[in-house]
Amino acid sequence: THDKQINTKEPVRLRFKKLANSNLSIYLDIYTNGISTYEFLNLYLVPETTPDAKIINKHVLGAANAIKARRIIEIAKGKAGINHNTSLAHMRLGQYVQHHIERSQETHRGASYASTCSNMYNHLVSYLGHRANTLQMKEITLDICKGFAQYLKHARTNSGRRISGVSAYHYFCSFKSMLAEAVVEQAIPTNPIAHMRSSEMPQRPVVIKAFLHADEVVQLV
Image 1: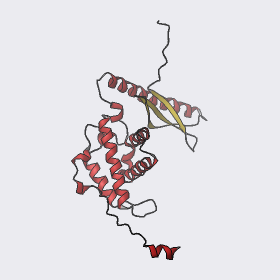
Image 2: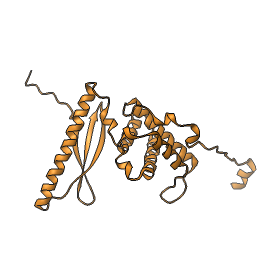
Image 3: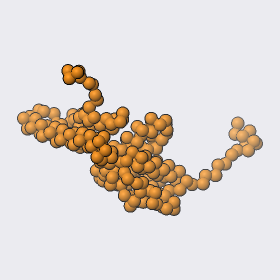
């Protein structure tokens, strides 16, 4: 009947995360195809201690709701077949990394892979600088992939220590795997890394393992 209400999950909701300075960071909780993803908007509500603060918050909320409405339209177009997964294509790189980690947990890749992806993104941030906060998935180019591969060959940890060749290899593999999944999800049309030569990518180093002889084990005991 017309009076019957059907409970459906709203596809996009505004969420708020409290920061150390008491401001509230606004982000979108986007629910599509049974998956929740998040988009931080770089918009903030301030404590309403003055009339000016209330006015500022009103305008900030208006901007956040406008972005929310645009995302809802993009999702609706995607369901109608007008545009394939526009919301993922416009998703920022950091948001897609989080989405990829969540998807990896669904496919039982384990905590080790999630940790590798997280470390991979930290190095992407070091490589891209301020662009890491604004780069959208559809803007990832072959040059960016080649540059990241070169960066990993000489990357260092926060303590200044050079990362191992094994780590560089695994970080780039996780980056490549993430882009491959993005193609499947229609967030990007092709994987730029498919156009890279093997010599341009970090290679798995040959590791020679040494083992103790029986008499050495006895001496160690």
